[in-house]
Image (cartoon, rainbow, N blue to C red; front, side):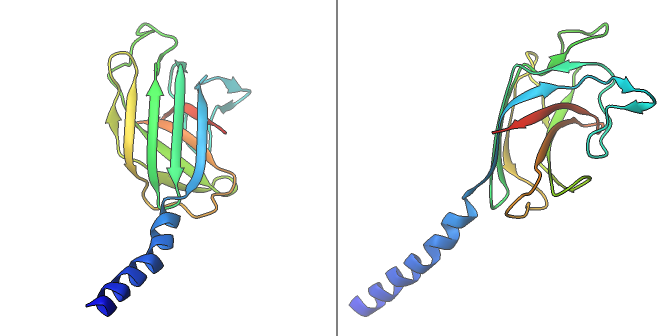
Length: 157
């Protein structure tokens, strides 16, 4: 009995570092900026191949934690239209997070889509698909509408 228990504990101890490494921090974003869909000459404000929203968007706070196993936790506050006739509203939008790793254009890793609350707040808790590589070089995080336009970008911590 003692040998079986010891073997079980030893096996668990061997697996623990693997489980812990799957939850190690990969990248963190600790603020955000809203999109300004301006044109610089003939070019729109395209980031990593993603077109900007048609109107300016503002965001008051954004924190994003991504773990090596692809686990993502996003807390967004005040993502609202910053221009146009619907200024100060969410425009009834839903959003998801898209992490790019590697040099531009990079490989994209997406979260689930969530609706914006009337005040522009949103939370995303889930897993990115596909799981990002470790390390994630040259990380860029965009908050994107269900239609595929970027509304905000994370500022790397």
